[in-house]
Length: 198
Image 1 (tube, rainbow, N blue to C red):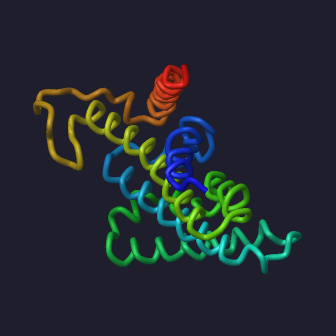
Image 2: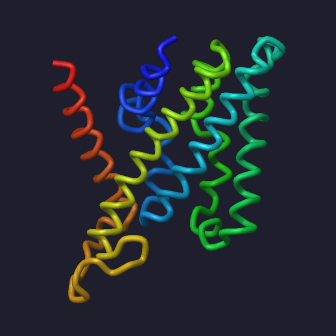
């Protein structure tokens, strides 16, 4: 199996946000700052890698009839670990991500990778797939967070980059702005991917 292709498929060709349009709830909700986006991207990537690893390692002992509940238990375990670490060492990020952190458990991107790839492939390709898909998710949320914070507030990672007199585009910080921006980014991404195919 070509591991480079597995990685690039997860990151670009089958990007969970820009191509598959799954797991959008957290993308719209927590990308109002770049820091939140980085934290959510890292959390989802960690959970994807670890859950793909465990599901792939146990794929021959997980009964077919209970595979989905088994996947959810595995994913929930790693989400709980992420929650506990953030709560202990990064309380402000934990508070900012709020309910969307535990909702990673039911993120369709993670469950889809466990079902569609890790359950059918060996451990190393499954880890690489988790890494690629996680990076693809992170790419999407970081783009959103970068644009929303910079043009919505004039800051990046809390540092004022645009002049103090910059009024900010309040629409970008609002949920409706996130929805519109995501639509524009999806259109731009798909246009680029279609040109590369041609």
